[in-house]
Image (tube, rainbow, N blue to C red; front, side):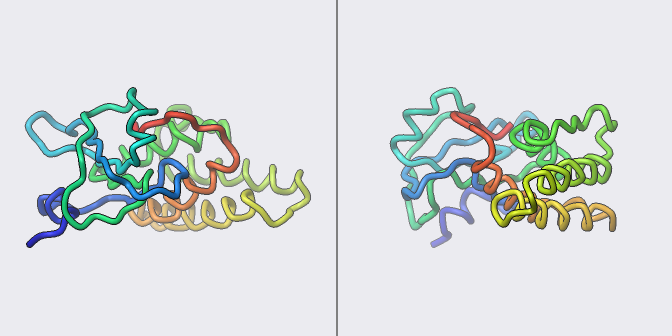
Length: 180
């Protein structure tokens, strides 16, 4: 019998696995994002606990109960969108609010966006005395994303950016945000 993840992916490659909210509860509901193109499968699936299913009625897509063997935590998002759309989602949710770097200003040239964002984080880290903490972790992982982008591998840059998204929750208030 196929797992819940295998059923949901319908043979598609997961572009990114993200943690969009901080919650230690096991998910019991799933919310699906709109299709990337009409007539295709959902762009993403968000796993939510009962409290967040009720607290986040503004998230797009209908919520339904999870059946099968899923043990994912609340806040996990499985994303199937193209890399550039996931990068834009990161920019919308945490990167631009945290750094002020707007991808549109840099014509969505993602290496430049990530590099400039990393420079802002490094400057903030220096101002804060370089103390070990969320900014240090963010800087390290954002640096990895920049390195991947410099090598032309935007897809691989999504891995450290997913970690950055989780760390950014300690730095930014994010009530009720949905993947965009």
